[in-house]
Image (cartoon, rainbow, N blue to C red):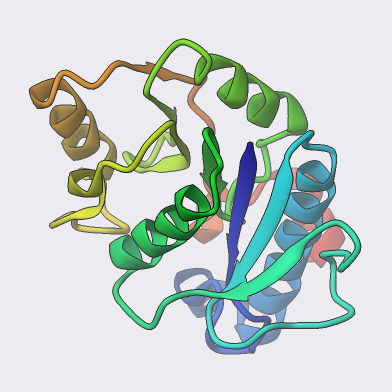
Length: 198
């Protein structure tokens, strides 16, 4: 079993850019670091191998403990191909169940990750639907590259398009409970607003 975590590097002006328009680059980076720390904490609890993939360069001495996480670099490609390449690498070394998450979902917890792996005992795929029409988690038992092809990433059609692919190919799947990603200022929950003093 393998858990893959996709993160961006903490660079002001390059993270949470839509939110930064409302709260500024520094606060947006502060928010993203809170989300990364949360993601690292829940991921560390997974009973699986753990790989963290950075967008631009590998960060050392950050939220992801080197004794728990293998650190890697995302492919230099569009987002779908970045995910596909990470899955390919995981399956190539013999993992039979792979779950991938990003770092935008503050509601995601270790139980969701555990449940995703459990569902893969009986299904070929699992998705964690996000309320904005995307997904916060995808898990597979083998590679289906079509799931990452020709998607309009960061739009409200990603989940429905992916489910359409699963249905058309008769790939068995299950869904986790819907959760909220934090992509817009309006998505920031009150407890984080207090932490950020915004």
